[in-house]
Image (cartoon, rainbow, N blue to C red; front, side):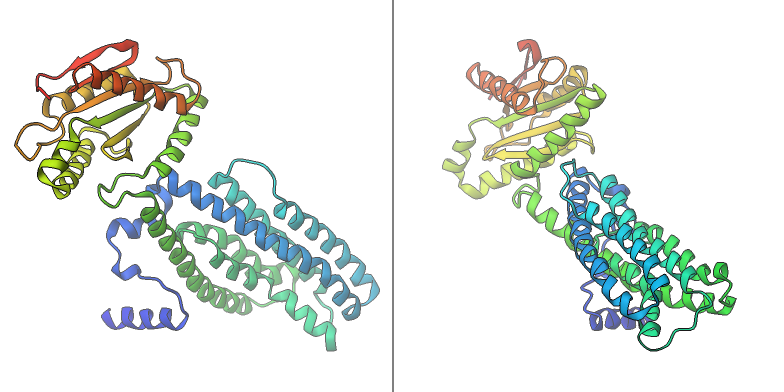
Length: 397
C-alpha cells in the first residue's frame, strides 16, 4: 500500500498537481469528497469562481465555435457543411448567453446549472455530428477535422479540471459524458462493444486525473478562504468576512421570516490588562474569550472579531428566549479570568430582527452596538436586550 501511495504521489508531482490528500485530516478529506460540511461563506465564494470560469470558457468557445465554420467549409461537402453551420450557430449562441454578464445572485446552484449548460452544449453537438458522420468515409482534411470532432468528450472531461469541485460533484458531472461517449457509436450502429469499453477505460483514466486536479483547486481555495476569513489570534472570523456572512444569513431570515439575533460583546477594562500585565496577557485573554464563546454557542452560530476587544455573535433562527438561555450561561461563568484571577466580564448588547422590527442588517448591528454602550455606561458586566431589558451578573466588574 505504501508503495502504491508513493507511486501516486510521484505521478501527481510529474503532472504538476499540487495535491496533498494523503496528508489531510479526516475532516479536510471529507470536505474534498462532498460539500456537506462546507460553510455558506466557502460555498458563496466557490459559486463566484465557478460562474466566472464558466463565463471565461464560454467566451473562448463562442469565438472558437464560430470561427470553426470556415474550417468546416474547406473540409466537407456543401450539404454537410450547411448542417454543421446551423449546429454551430446554435452552439455559438448558447456560449454567448453563458458568457454574458447577467446581473444575478451568485449561488452554487446557479453555477452548477451554468456548468451543465456549458458542458451539454458541445456534448449535444458531438451527438449530432456523430450521427451525421456515421457511415461516411473521409479523406485528407475532412478526415482530420472529423477525427477532431470525436475528441470533444475528452475536451469536456478535461474541462472539469478548471473548476473547484468535490470528488462527488466531478463524478456526477462526468457520468453523462461517459455514457453518451461510450454508447453513441452503438446508437449510430457503427461501433463494437469492445470499442465502447476501451473508450470508457481511457475516459475513466483521464477523469481520475482531472478529479484530483479539481479537488486540488478546492483544497487550495479552502485554505485561502480560511486564511483570509480567520483572525490569526483568536481564530474567529474577521470583520470583513463576518459582514458577508451576516448579510447572507439576514437575507435568508427575511426570506423565510425566521428570527435572527446578534450579540455584541465588549470586554470590560481590557486596556488595563495590556497596561498592567502586557500585551501577551491581553492576547491570551482574547484567545480565552473566543474559546469560551464557542462553548456557550451552537456549532451553527458564527462569532466575529469585530475589532480590538469587541466580538459579535451571529445567531440564525434564535429568538429572545434562546438568547436569554445563552446569556444566563455567559453571565454565570463569564469569559474566563483576568490575570489577577477575577472574572473577565463584558458589556453586552443584543438585537433581534423581528423583535426590533429591523429591515437591514447594518441597522441590526448598530442597535446591538448602542445597547452594548448603554450596558457599559450603566455599570458594565451586564447585557441589555430588546425592549431595553437588562440582565445583570452577580459578578462585579
